[in-house]
Image (cartoon, rainbow, N blue to C red):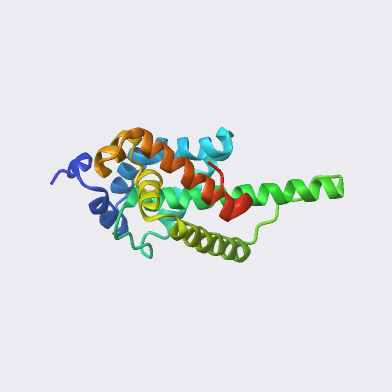
Amino acid sequence: MPPPNLKHITDNELWRLVMDSDVSAYGELYERYWESLFETAYWHLYDKAAAKDIVQEVFVYCWQKREQIQIKESVIAYFRAAVRFKILNYLKSESAREKYQLLAGRALPEITNNTGEHMASADLEANYRRELERLPEKMREVFIDSRDYGLSIDEIAHKRAISPQTVKNQLSAALKKLREGLGNFFME
C-alpha cells in the first residue's frame, strides 16, 4: 500500500503519526515549518547560525520527546513557542556570558545546566503568560493570532473585523507592554 500523500494531512493528524514514530510525517512538518521558524529566530537574533541551531534543536527535541508531547491545539503554535523560549534562553545565556567575560576579562567556557535551563524556561514562561494575561482582551487576542498562530496583519484584520492599522497598533502596544513587564527577556 503506497504511503498517503502527507501534503493533504492536517498538522494535528501529522503529529499523531509522529507520536507513533512516523519519520515521513515528521519530515512533512519539518518541510512545512522550518523556514518560517528560522525566519522567526533570525528576526530576533540577526544571527543565521544561531537561528539555524535553535530551530534544529527544537526539531530534534520534539522528535526525541514525541511520545510525551501532547499537542491538543496547534502544532505550529507549539513549535513557535518552543523556538521563542529557546531564543530567550539563548539571549539570556549570551547576555550573562558577555557580562562575565567583561568582568573576568577573558572568555568563559561553555557551561550547560539542563536543570537550570529548565527552571529558567519555566519561570520565563510563567512570567510571559502572566504578562500576556494582563493585556486587554482584544489586544491579547490580536497578539496571540499573530505570534502563536502566525496570522498576517490582513488575516487578523479580517478575522477580528478591524482595520489593518488597528491590528498594527494593537501589536505595537502589546509588544511595548510585554517588554515593560518582562524587562530584558522579551524582544520584538
